[in-house]
Length: 253
Ligand code: NAP
Image (cartoon, rainbow, N blue to C red):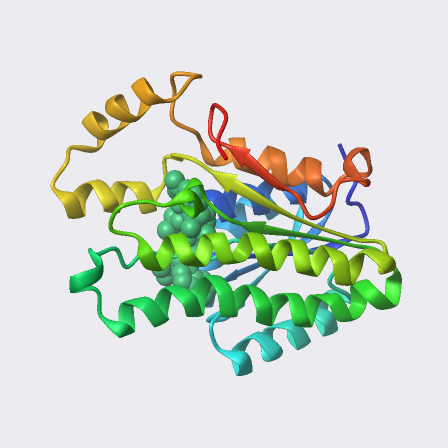
């Protein structure tokens, strides 16, 4: 499919995991992809994979929680690639703890990356989207938005992103910009591996337990999310906006 030919896509947190798979998929769809992560060296693997497959990509360093860094990165992408047409707010991290042990720093860090980062990137991305009367924004929420022990910060941020998605869809709809959220369940990435390590659970054991609770009886792959993001950036879904699509191997919410 090449439904994004001539378009420029920004994927944050695209050095690995869901972001890397999404960046590769949007490049296959024809987009020039700005692979954004904390430092440029980290983006090389994804950029090289895209270039090696005949696609187009640039690596861009940016801490999404910094206003200054997001503005500079967006300026760089607009000047090197000409526009920002697709934005995938994917950068994320965990600072899990029970509420009585959670530090203010751990609360603020999670809010800063997921909520502030998505706001800052959307504010930049909408500039050329509004001017061109065309845009697609996809925000990464999570099944944790429904509540998860040890994740008051992360659950609040991921639920917050759902409200953010709906408000942004209302504001940007008149400019032919679709805004949706994808809410993954258990996806096999460094993030879920790190959770297993932190809680002292063997990862294969954690996956086995997870699979029992998932109707499709398997945990997800980054490509399962990338495919849905790609679909939400296609004209086939051009009348879908302000929605939260749970991609969790079964029903949620
Ligand atoms: P991951 O493997 O940990 O990758 C996240 C990427 O984001 C990393 O490359 C990380 O860089 C980067 N990042 C973190 N903070 C950043 C910042 N301030 N600025 C720029 N980049 C930053 O995670 P993932 O599992 O692919 O998750 C991707 C998204 O999906 C996240 O929003 C996550 O919350 C969401 N999600 C994941 C799952 C799951 O089961 N995996 C489920 C639901 C939702 P560093 O390597 O330098 O930290």
